[in-house]
Amino acid sequence: MTLEEGRRVRLAEDIGIGEAVAGEPGAVVGFLSLGAGAEGTVERVDGELPESEEVREYQRLKALFEDYGHTMPEASRRRLEAEIAALEPQWAAYRDQGKRVTVRVRLDNGLVIDGAHQDVLTPL
Image (cartoon, rainbow, N blue to C red; front, side, top):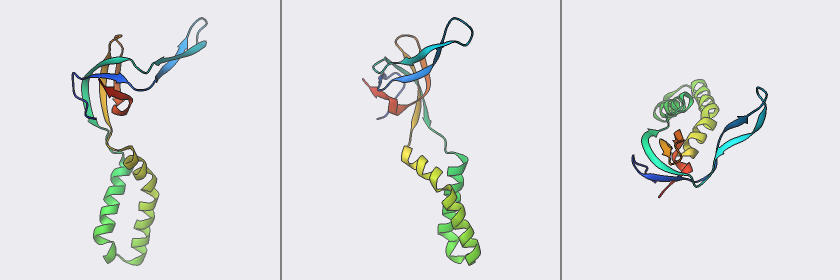
């Protein structure tokens, strides 16, 4: 799904906003959320989420290993493999989330959601 500015969208799931406070200072009386089905208009598409430092380092080390690993001394190659293995969980999490796009949506009730991931919205 490609979201564009001006496109109408609907929340696909409930989005938690935060605690509801009333009465004495700090007394939590509930939780605020936007219910699935709320509709609005996309005001801005921010593009893909940036890669973390760990993901960039994984990509750099993996490319280094693939290009020059066969020419490295055994100890250096083992150390590089260990560094790559240590960053594998961050890489897998980034890869599994796919290319996620964030958007700013103005809901019909006047609330604005900024930095929302496209996967919580469905186009109308």
